Each structure stands twice: as C-alpha cells, then as structure tokens.
Length: 177
Image 1 (cartoon, rainbow, N blue to C red):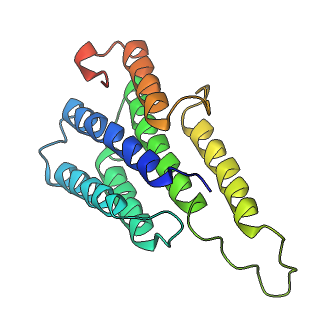
Image 2 (cartoon, rainbow, N blue to C red):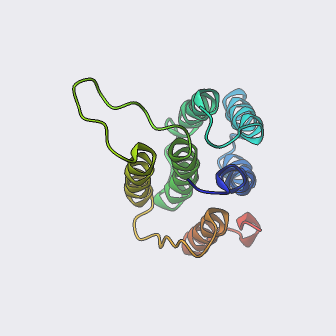
C-alpha cells in the first residue's frame, strides 16, 4: 500500500481545482448552473477525500468523484470545443482518473470471486491491477504524457497542463502554479 495515498490524492485534487475553474471560465461555463454544479461536485469529492483514511473503504469518495465526472461531462460534452481545449479537458479527466486509481488501489482489495482460489497477496495484486488500469486510462486521455514515480502526481499534472496551455497558444495566465 502507498504510505501517503490520502495526501497524494488530496494534493492532486488541489492541483486540479484551479485548472477546472480556469477551463470553465475559458469556455464561458464557470457561472452557468451546470458549471457551478460541476465545481460543487468537485468540491464535495475533495472534502470527502480530506476525511478518508487509506486502507478503509472509499465508496463515498468514489461516488462523489463519479458525480463530478457526470457533472463535468454535462458541461463540456455539448460544447463544440477546439482540439487544444479538448486537450485541457482530457488532462482534468486524467487527473481525476489518477485520483480514482490512488484511492481504489489503497482501499481494501475485493474478495476473490466465488469458485476461484484466493491469491496469497490479494492487496498487492489489487494494487498492481488498479495501477496498470489507471496508467492505461491516463495514456488514453493524454497520449504521450510522461509518467514518473519520481515526481508527485500533482507536479506531473501541472506539467502536463502547462505544456497543453503552451501548445494550445492559450493566455499564460491559464498556467497552473
């Protein structure tokens, strides 16, 4: 189990929030009811994450993150966004997928299906499976992203965001801190 799962996920959520607001502002959605609903859903998930203890079930956080994804998609899906803005949307979604991966991998492993022999280290297998699935999802959303275990997810998120801001020719004020 990751020794710092809760702080790692919380740090990434803190990095995502300002970029979420920036994107919604850029697209003119920050003050709309759907934009406000997406921000509120994100904040609810972030608050729940702050109270989570790794190694404990996280159904509430997972549900709230799912609610955010639904609200966020309701805002951006109907928009006819140019590819450079879609890249920013995908970075936010990849960040959320990473948070989900950290939380799921550091929650108790599900029991072995009935009829299958239990593995010796179910938690380790669970973590490896979730990690591989998360990396696949992140690469699907942000092709070419360079992931490193030597840099925090929040740092990697900010780097990917800033690189997309530069590549898209956006105002530098959109850059993450």
